[in-house]
Length: 179
Image (cartoon, rainbow, N blue to C red):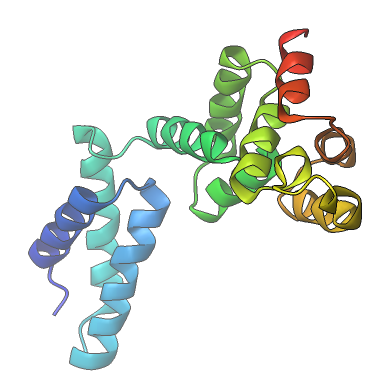
């Protein structure tokens, strides 16, 4: 049964394991409330009010901070090779407010020169596409496929073309350091 005390313990247990936005924690707890309402016949409105109170308390206590969550996720996703567009989308799916997403992306842009190109390099290196292909002879054969892969990750055509047409991995790094 989803009592307020059990919901609070579940929320603490969830936050011990995962970083979360306020809205994401709300969704997790609401799934418990809905399951309890179906299974045990508990009051959905009462559970919803308890969830709102738990989220409010956790924000007040500093357990939930959407801005800090956004900054942490933006940094991690960027290092992994995720484009700014894809980062924005993923954070929006987690319920992070748009102003927190923008602030985190602006902080990244202040730290990193041309963040989308840096992310594209990380993605291409990880996936071994463009100049990171093992066999240089395969580059022309896989050019369109590599462009499409970068496009699906949210990179602009210009950035994808810049990666795919780079002479070597070092050429990407050098052209970024010239900016």
